[in-house]
Image (cartoon, rainbow, N blue to C red; front, side, top):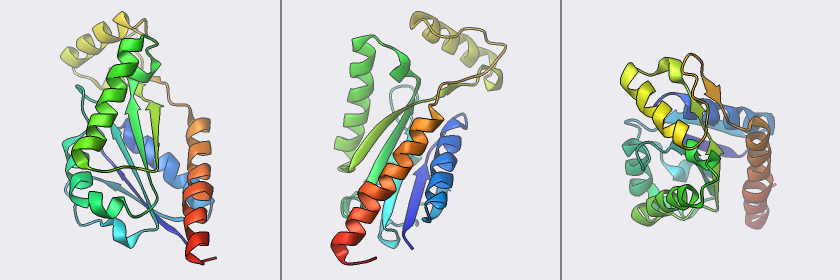
Length: 188
Protein backbone atom coordinates (compact mmCIF):
# COMPACT_ATOMS: atom_id res chain seq x y z
CA UNK A 1 0.00 0.00 0.00
CA UNK A 2 1.36 3.39 -0.97
CA UNK A 3 1.97 5.96 1.79
CA UNK A 4 1.62 9.72 1.34
CA UNK A 5 2.47 12.56 3.67
CA UNK A 6 0.35 15.69 3.41
CA UNK A 7 2.17 18.44 5.25
CA UNK A 8 0.38 21.77 5.58
CA UNK A 9 0.59 25.21 7.10
CA UNK A 10 -2.42 27.34 7.87
CA UNK A 11 -3.15 30.75 9.32
CA UNK A 12 -6.93 30.84 9.60
CA UNK A 13 -7.69 27.12 9.33
CA UNK A 14 -8.82 26.75 5.72
CA UNK A 15 -5.65 25.09 4.43
CA UNK A 16 -6.18 22.40 7.08
CA UNK A 17 -9.57 21.69 5.49
CA UNK A 18 -7.93 21.52 2.06
CA UNK A 19 -5.25 19.10 3.35
CA UNK A 20 -7.85 16.93 5.09
CA UNK A 21 -10.05 16.83 1.97
CA UNK A 22 -7.09 15.67 -0.15
CA UNK A 23 -6.21 13.13 2.54
CA UNK A 24 -9.75 11.78 2.51
CA UNK A 25 -9.65 11.34 -1.25
CA UNK A 26 -6.29 9.56 -1.11
CA UNK A 27 -7.58 7.20 1.59
CA UNK A 28 -10.59 6.50 -0.62
CA UNK A 29 -8.11 5.49 -3.34
CA UNK A 30 -6.46 3.02 -0.96
CA UNK A 31 -3.48 5.18 -0.02
CA UNK A 32 -2.26 5.29 3.59
CA UNK A 33 -2.15 9.01 4.34
CA UNK A 34 -0.74 11.11 7.18
CA UNK A 35 -2.02 14.70 7.34
CA UNK A 36 0.38 16.75 9.49
CA UNK A 37 0.56 20.40 10.51
CA UNK A 38 4.07 21.68 9.70
CA UNK A 39 4.51 23.58 12.98
CA UNK A 40 7.36 21.90 14.86
CA UNK A 41 7.28 18.66 12.87
CA UNK A 42 10.65 18.61 11.13
CA UNK A 43 10.94 14.91 12.06
CA UNK A 44 8.40 13.86 9.40
CA UNK A 45 10.77 12.81 6.65
CA UNK A 46 9.84 12.34 2.98
CA UNK A 47 12.02 9.22 2.86
CA UNK A 48 9.36 7.31 4.82
CA UNK A 49 6.72 7.98 2.15
CA UNK A 50 6.00 7.10 -1.47
CA UNK A 51 4.82 10.65 -2.13
CA UNK A 52 4.41 14.03 -0.44
CA UNK A 53 1.89 16.81 -0.90
CA UNK A 54 2.64 20.17 0.70
CA UNK A 55 -0.17 22.70 1.18
CA UNK A 56 0.33 26.26 2.39
CA UNK A 57 -1.56 29.52 2.20
CA UNK A 58 -0.29 32.84 1.01
CA UNK A 59 -0.35 35.42 3.78
CA UNK A 60 1.21 38.85 3.25
CA UNK A 61 3.03 37.67 0.12
CA UNK A 62 4.58 34.49 1.52
CA UNK A 63 3.83 31.04 2.87
CA UNK A 64 3.93 29.98 6.51
CA UNK A 65 7.45 29.93 7.96
CA UNK A 66 6.98 26.42 9.33
CA UNK A 67 6.28 25.14 5.80
CA UNK A 68 9.19 27.10 4.35
CA UNK A 69 11.51 25.66 7.01
CA UNK A 70 10.28 22.07 6.57
CA UNK A 71 10.56 22.17 2.78
CA UNK A 72 14.03 23.75 2.90
CA UNK A 73 15.30 21.12 5.35
CA UNK A 74 13.81 18.23 3.35
CA UNK A 75 14.23 19.56 -0.23
CA UNK A 76 16.90 17.01 -1.23
CA UNK A 77 14.59 14.13 -0.23
CA UNK A 78 11.50 15.81 -1.67
CA UNK A 79 13.23 16.01 -5.03
CA UNK A 80 13.53 12.20 -5.11
CA UNK A 81 9.86 11.21 -4.53
CA UNK A 82 6.61 12.17 -6.28
CA UNK A 83 5.49 15.52 -4.85
CA UNK A 84 2.91 18.21 -5.33
CA UNK A 85 2.39 21.68 -3.92
CA UNK A 86 -0.98 23.28 -3.22
CA UNK A 87 -0.83 27.06 -2.88
CA UNK A 88 -4.02 28.25 -1.19
CA UNK A 89 -4.67 31.87 -2.03
CA UNK A 90 -7.51 34.31 -2.58
CA UNK A 91 -5.56 36.19 -5.23
CA UNK A 92 -6.20 33.38 -7.70
CA UNK A 93 -9.73 34.76 -7.97
CA UNK A 94 -8.45 38.17 -9.06
CA UNK A 95 -8.43 38.33 -12.87
CA UNK A 96 -6.01 41.27 -12.94
CA UNK A 97 -2.84 40.08 -14.72
CA UNK A 98 -0.69 41.92 -12.16
CA UNK A 99 -2.31 39.96 -9.31
CA UNK A 100 -1.83 36.70 -11.21
CA UNK A 101 1.85 37.56 -11.81
CA UNK A 102 2.31 38.33 -8.13
CA UNK A 103 0.91 34.92 -7.08
CA UNK A 104 3.11 33.21 -9.66
CA UNK A 105 6.16 35.10 -8.36
CA UNK A 106 5.41 34.14 -4.73
CA UNK A 107 5.14 30.45 -5.67
CA UNK A 108 8.24 30.46 -7.88
CA UNK A 109 10.20 32.35 -5.22
CA UNK A 110 9.24 29.68 -2.68
CA UNK A 111 10.52 26.92 -4.98
CA UNK A 112 13.72 28.82 -5.77
CA UNK A 113 14.49 29.65 -2.13
CA UNK A 114 13.75 26.12 -0.87
CA UNK A 115 15.48 24.38 -3.80
CA UNK A 116 12.45 22.12 -4.26
CA UNK A 117 10.92 21.28 -7.62
CA UNK A 118 7.58 19.52 -7.14
CA UNK A 119 6.23 17.33 -9.92
CA UNK A 120 2.97 19.30 -9.75
CA UNK A 121 1.88 22.66 -8.41
CA UNK A 122 -1.71 23.86 -8.11
CA UNK A 123 -3.31 27.12 -7.09
CA UNK A 124 -6.34 26.58 -4.86
CA UNK A 125 -8.82 29.33 -4.13
CA UNK A 126 -9.06 29.81 -0.38
CA UNK A 127 -11.65 31.29 1.94
CA UNK A 128 -12.60 34.56 3.58
CA UNK A 129 -13.56 33.71 7.15
CA UNK A 130 -14.57 37.29 8.02
CA UNK A 131 -16.35 36.17 11.19
CA UNK A 132 -13.16 34.61 12.57
CA UNK A 133 -11.08 37.74 12.03
CA UNK A 134 -10.46 40.41 14.62
CA UNK A 135 -11.78 43.87 13.74
CA UNK A 136 -8.52 45.10 12.21
CA UNK A 137 -7.92 42.09 9.98
CA UNK A 138 -11.61 42.09 8.97
CA UNK A 139 -11.34 45.75 7.96
CA UNK A 140 -8.04 45.18 6.12
CA UNK A 141 -9.30 42.10 4.25
CA UNK A 142 -12.51 43.87 3.28
CA UNK A 143 -10.49 46.72 1.73
CA UNK A 144 -8.25 44.31 -0.18
CA UNK A 145 -11.16 42.22 -1.42
CA UNK A 146 -13.18 45.31 -2.33
CA UNK A 147 -10.40 46.48 -4.68
CA UNK A 148 -10.52 43.10 -6.43
CA UNK A 149 -14.32 43.24 -6.70
CA UNK A 150 -14.90 40.42 -4.21
CA UNK A 151 -17.34 39.70 -1.42
CA UNK A 152 -17.38 42.39 1.27
CA UNK A 153 -20.24 41.43 3.58
CA UNK A 154 -18.20 40.93 6.75
CA UNK A 155 -21.11 39.36 8.64
CA UNK A 156 -20.54 36.06 6.85
CA UNK A 157 -17.75 33.76 5.71
CA UNK A 158 -16.99 32.81 2.10
CA UNK A 159 -15.39 29.63 0.78
CA UNK A 160 -14.13 29.72 -2.80
CA UNK A 161 -12.39 26.35 -2.95
CA UNK A 162 -13.50 24.12 -5.81
CA UNK A 163 -13.79 20.88 -3.82
CA UNK A 164 -14.55 18.79 -6.93
CA UNK A 165 -11.41 20.05 -8.65
CA UNK A 166 -9.39 19.31 -5.49
CA UNK A 167 -10.81 15.77 -5.48
CA UNK A 168 -9.83 15.32 -9.15
CA UNK A 169 -6.31 16.58 -8.39
CA UNK A 170 -5.90 14.02 -5.57
CA UNK A 171 -7.13 11.12 -7.72
CA UNK A 172 -4.83 12.22 -10.55
CA UNK A 173 -1.89 12.48 -8.14
CA UNK A 174 -2.42 8.86 -7.13
CA UNK A 175 -2.59 7.64 -10.72
CA UNK A 176 -0.04 9.95 -12.38
CA UNK A 177 2.57 10.23 -9.67
CA UNK A 178 2.28 7.28 -7.28
CA UNK A 179 1.17 4.47 -9.55
CA UNK A 180 3.50 5.52 -12.38
CA UNK A 181 6.44 5.64 -9.94
CA UNK A 182 5.55 2.25 -8.42
CA UNK A 183 5.22 0.67 -11.87
CA UNK A 184 8.67 1.98 -12.80
CA UNK A 185 10.08 0.45 -9.58
CA UNK A 186 8.48 -2.89 -10.41
CA UNK A 187 6.03 -2.67 -7.47
CA UNK A 188 2.37 -3.62 -7.87
